[in-house]
Image (cartoon, rainbow, N blue to C red; front, side):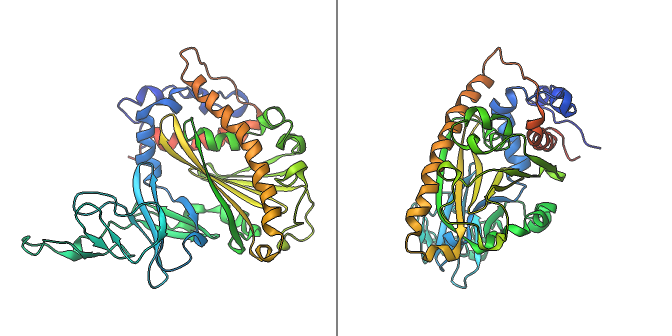
Length: 383
């Protein structure tokens, strides 16, 4: 039978009745859910080292030798395309002393530890280890960089540290069928950006699920053409959800620079669709653009938000494509900055001694759904 976790987080887990209540009577979470280092460590062990997590797009590593490095919940990671064109992922931790063998992103023929010169190929296998001939029982085949599961869905790269994890397509579940019409694999990454936020990582996807704030915080930008009363939520297992609503393109004044995505047929210019995939991926579709936002924890009070702006691949050949696409990037920066300032204030409030969680409203329905699933993962054991 499931049992509540014990230790320094048990008191927090015992104080969640308000969040657990049905939406009409529910409250937001106590501040410690977002400020406790012990909660973050539980999330690392129970969520980020167990779930499939999006780390980028396949076109970021198109050629053999292309690689990217990350620190996912503090765990150093390499994703690379090897000589055969296969995508591999492995821990960025040398098997000698633990030094990271690669930095940043680029193209390489091999990875070399800058400390003692151990070298590895693009699949993580050990190529050379100086001065180990006299080491009794040394077996190069047993000293590969530790592999990490990697797979692709819709052109997005996902990794999973759990060797016994379920298949990516099973993890995605019903969301996969609900999003087939998007055909994100037919798109290409135009721009990737990283925003550093002074808040707990959970506040990033919660803010993106919050229709309540659109006509207040974003009243002169996004909220000006995204009516909050024309939204339809559909909730699914594992905290996932989709949202159908009305909104103009993510461009100045909500006016498209390109026209509709070719496979969107006769959908209206105000077509908008979003979905959330645990633990930290929010996706937004408009009639002419796709935006993905992925939150990565960097500490109890900080995180990074990785953004990916996608357009249909055939549009990139248009002579004025870059100029028109830049209008979307500039507009996105304007209203995202409104969120950046607000979630920082929110984090400070959650740390205040006098903070008491307030009630959730109907427009916070997806937050209630995703948060309850997450709290089950973190505070209830699998035993």
